[in-house]
Image 1 (cartoon, rainbow, N blue to C red):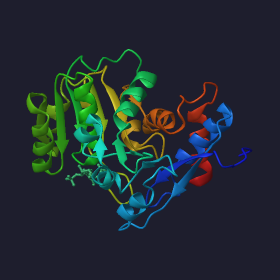
Image 2: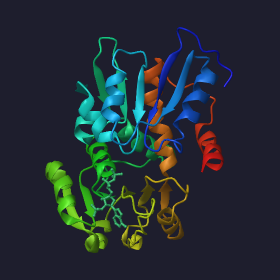
Image 3: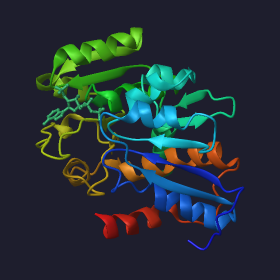
Image 4: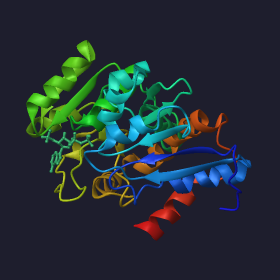
Length: 286
Ligand code: ATR
């Protein structure tokens, strides 16, 4: 980083616990460098039980805003004084803006990230073209479902290990939602235009996700929201079947773009290969 920090430097950052593995500081600081913006983007690691105190302490706008990652996305929404419709629908926020009047605005750009990743890696895919399957019924799945519904998906099939949670998430979608248990996955996958893994299986000690991907049509697109490793076993299984795939890194980069604009008042500059940069950071930071 070659930028000087002075009295008018715009400060923003990312809050998570842990935050060490977040790729956002690399991305945003590279964009700041390339755009010549007087700003800085810092990682924050509030204690697991201290997010509210952390966010309350930033009221007033000395820090312009923060992205929020695990495990604070739900709390981020509850600490805010107002929230965009998409954050309310996702019941979670990944972006807080600290207004000068002391109030906090919550937004959620994860849905834009999901749609952006499809646009980049599965060009021509039509969200309105048929049923889309989401695996999982946690916060990530809820956010994905809200974004797909907004983009006009005619049917959203929620497949989850715990059926009751799938029923809850599908129920919130009204006529568009359909719940399935894990052992009904083949039924859910039949005729689907896309399958999105929003479970945490494979993460930490999550275990492996056993999904009969061969039940999808040959032209179905398969996405994983996880990106460590970049080609997850789930995506590899899809590739082995010849399916088009979309990776989680595409989503990470695409959700960072509107965040950057919210913090620094301009879109990220062209000419930075954000994906290559994130990949390099993954090699260095694990
Ligand atoms: P997040 O906020 O990241 O979505 P979460 O709310 O803990 O995290 O949700 C994790 C999701 O992954 C849940 O849908 C969970 O299924 P359950 O509702 O049955 O717990 C799913 N999940 C986690 N490990 C899994 C595994 N080994 N197999 C299948 N589903 C798994």
